[in-house]
Length: 156
Image 1 (cartoon, rainbow, N blue to C red):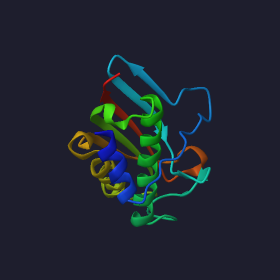
Image 2: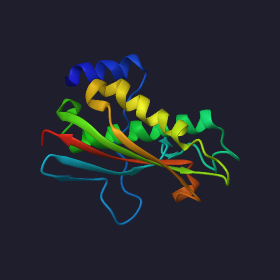
Image 3: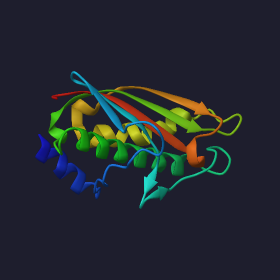
Image 4: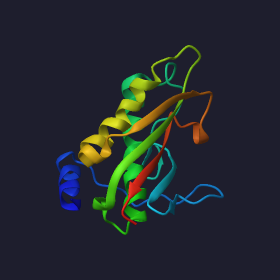
């Protein structure tokens, strides 16, 4: 299964980055039994936050969706690191939680989270279909527009 996932990533033009180190006093992931928890990932690209600002003010929905995709790519990088490089060990993505820095009155957080949800489902196939939350926030670390964390069932 890992080869199929790597093939899909290649077809989509996605090269997973090296998993980012934590920016504070936490770990990037924890594994408890077969449940893998991935810490919140920001829309990092080339070592910096690629999309900043409030969605619905400085950031439009399409750009915020791209930010959510970047978060999902970084989640996959953390999952790969946690599983010794083998994304084929993912049995199911259980849940994604999306946090969207939102301007007052912005109510399309669910559309923003489609960026992350679609990417995860497209890369992992049926095991990537998940429950989720999409929550508006006043602000996020480093002025990021989006942050996404994940809970997965894996072969540990």
